Structure formats: C-alpha cells, structure tokens
Amino acid sequence: MEEDKVQQNRREQDEQATSQRAAILGVQYLDTRPIEATIGLVNGVLDVPTMHQNRLVPLVAGNGGQPWQFGITTQTPQSFIRDMTKQYNDAGHNINFLLISYSGYNQIMNRYDPIVRVVHDDIKIAQEGDSNTIAEVSKTLNSVGSDEIFDYLISQADRLGASDIHIENQRTHMRIRMRIDGVLHPVADLENDRYRIILSALASRANISTAATEPQSGHMQKEITRDGATHLLNMRVEMVPTMYGLDAVLRLFNFDESMLNLDRLGIGQVERSEIDEVVSHPRGMVLMVGPTGSGKSTTLYSIINALNNTSRKIITLEDPIEYGISGITQIPINTTEGQSFADGLRSVLRLDPDVVMIGEIRDADTAKTAIQASITGHLVLSSFHANTTSAAFSRIIDMIGVNPIFSSAIRLVIAQRLVRKLDDESKQEYEPDEATRKWVQNALKDLPAHIEKPDLNNFKLWRPVISDSSPFGFKGRIIIMEQMVVTDRIQRFLRGDENDLHTEIIEKTAREGGMVTLLESGVLAALRGETTLDEINQAI
Figure 1 (cartoon, rainbow, N blue to C red):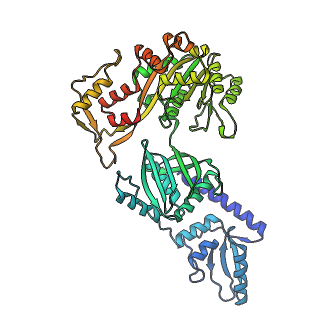
Figure 2: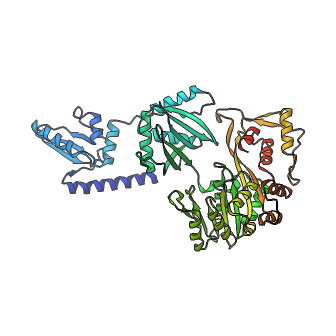
Figure 3: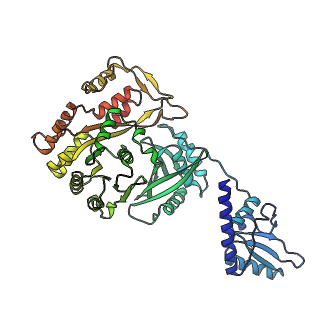
C-alpha cells in the first residue's frame, strides 16, 4: 500500500514537471492517466521500432478535417517532429503534437507492445576439467541481451556468494572467473563483442575511463532483489591495461553491520576471552597478520564494531574504505597519490580519539607513529603482512630496530587464515590411513596442556561430498587463528634484554606460555569435522 502511494507521488511529480515544460515550449499538454487503460493507438501509421526510437505515439487519426494527433515526450527529437510536420502538411493533412509525460508514454507502450521478459538459467560453477558446464554457461551469457548482461553477471555472482569477478581478455575471447570461498573458478568464455558492452557498463558506473593507459580504481553499488528481499551490493573495481585490452576485477562486499560481529566469526572461547581482555584496556596495540584474503579486515572491523558505543571516539584510516560503519569516523588514505598512513595518523591524534584503526602498517614511519599513539592513551588496531605471530615481531624489528617503547606498546598479535568449511549436510566420515594418523599425531604432539587433547590413537576425519546445494562439498569459510599475548618474557626479547632475537625463539617462548599455533588450530578443526587436512595444508 505504501509502495503504491510512493508510485502515485512520483507520477504526480512527473506530470507536473511535464505540464510546466509544455507551457515553456508552447505545446499543448495531455495528462494520459485517465485514458491509459483504454486507449488504442492508431495502427499502420508508425512501426513499433520507430515509436521506441523517437519516443512518440499516434493517438488520433485525422479525417474530415480533424487533425492527426501524436503524443510526444521531452525525449522526442525535434528533427523528427519537423520531418513529420512537413510530410503531413505536404500531403494536405493537419498535425498536432501533444506533450505527454515519459511515465505516460511508457504505460501506453507497455500496453501496446508488452515487454517480453526472458528468464535465463542460473550460472553453474564447473568442476575441474568440466568443459561442458563452461560451454553451457558461456552460451547462456552470450545470449543475454546487451542491456542486461552486466547486471546479470553481478547478480549471479552475488547469488553464488562470490567475493570477486575476474574479467580477463584473451586473444580470441573474454574469460570470466569467480572466486568462491577463496578458490578461483572458471565460469565462462564470452565472445569478443561482449567485451565492449561489459566494459562500457563497468566504466560508466564505476567512473573509469576506457581510454586510460594506467591502472585505475573505482567503486559502484547495485541493489540486488532475490526471493522478495533487497540488499545493497558494494563493489570495488580495479582495472589494468593488458596485451589484449582492459582487464577488470570486481570485489564484491555484500554485508550489513550485523555481520561484523565477533560472535559470528566462530572464534574459540580461549581466543575470544584473550581478545576481549586486551581490547577492554584504553591503550596498547593489537596487530592482525596474515596474507591477502585471510579475513584480517573482517576481524578488525568486528573488533571495532564491538567497541563502537557513544562513550568512545573511534577513527579509522583506510586504503580504501571497505565497510561503512555508522558511528565511526572513517578516513580514506590514497597512498597511490602520495598520502601516507603516518601523516593521517598524526592528524587524527589531534581529534582526541579513544580507538584508532590503521588499515595497514607498511613502513617504519607509520609503525613508529602507531607505537607512539598506543602508549599515549590510545588503543591502536592495525594489520601487517607476516605469516605468523612470531614472524611479525621479527619483521617489525627489522623495520624499526629494537625499540623498548614497542615492547610496552604491543599487547596482542593475531595470525589468521580462512579455510573452506565442509558442508554439514553432505560431508562424509572416513578412517584415515596410518601415514595420515602419524602426521596428525606429530602435528599435535606439543599441544599446550590447557587445550583438551583428542584421542590421537582413535580419530576420524571427514571428506567433502558434492551435492546439488554445494557443488564442491563446502559451504562458507571458517577462521583458523593463532594468538600471541605479549607476556613479560616476550617483552624482554623485544627490549633487547635477550641476545637471541629470532622467530623460533619468540615462538618457543610463546608456546611455553600456552599459545596454540596456526597448524595446531587447523588440525583440531579438521578433527572436529569442520574442514579437511588438505584445506589446512593449502592455507598454512
């Protein structure tokens, strides 16, 4: 009911604007609302393509001195009106043009020439080596109309839960691939003429030039409606010139703020209590480490969201901003144009924040500024590129040297990976062979005492089973986490009190304090039936 009222208000505004436009142009205005349901257009005067192309309709046939009447819109070309006037006058006929709203024109044309909506098959993801499915999807995509192929591609990627769409130019065709649950899958090979259509739509919406010879970044949004529900899909666009044209990657961000919740990340009880304890303090530094695509940003945002209340001032510095969160001041830092996180951080510290999140520590200047901020009454969160928690310490000390202030600033380092989660509906239990059993026993032989140790002489594993709902036997991803709480003993290494400062020594010290490594966390997840050992070995 409310939607009908909105539509009526929009139509009224369109009619008022058209009436005012008619007065300015000196043309008679016609409100078509009373006649739209019953009007019959004059047949044989104009063909349907001409009516669509020139946005006009024949309303009344002239006879007995009565003039011909045509409904025109503000989009009808003046040259076409002049040509028609001359044509009819030369034939001895009078002709009148009445200005109708574009909404009215659409209503009349939709009744006269109803739109035939073609429903295309949903995209399927091919198994490895399955060229038939790729050929089938390619045929479907090549048959989609020029005006809808780009939207269709995006909506299908969203339906499949893809995080990226890769559009790649080959010599003879254009390849489409999608990343689903962290794995890149071939989807379709499209004809070359589709390239310009997709590129044109992408460029206009993401404000990117098709003539550029340098890499470009852009942003776009699209409303997706499925099963009666609508959500907003944010997309980051990266485009780069290649040998055969512009290649593009679209990163899809489909989320609402409720998804950025520590409770929904599946973090273990011990790890969660350590995070809660550290971030409850008003000062200190927390680092998230891991490779690209390991979920660092999502975990950081979830921590920020947990801290987000009216009593805290939270500021983020990001390159680029990936998630918009209400109640938080988010500042974009464009490092490609000379801006730096360090300069931005020095500026925002004057705004008296309680919590600061830095997108990434990339250089010594940013690291030193962040450390200084964390010991002067700020909680500082950031990401950093390192494989493990102990390797992060080695890398930062290589960057800034042995720094006593750093030892008192850093409070927690979290290393993280994402692995595919087995589909609980279809996964299959199996008995591991002796070699696998020994490998698991060796991987967990030094598990800290506070972790409940499974029976390593009698355990089962699970394998993925393909089903209609999960074509690879997996559904979603889970976090594998390694957390190093900085104790007094570790601080001694960072201050330089101990001579042997290297990754193995720091990890050994943390292990003695009860740290569970990434590998141990992953193997325990496999024993719980959440993932497979293959997934763990690929990720860690």
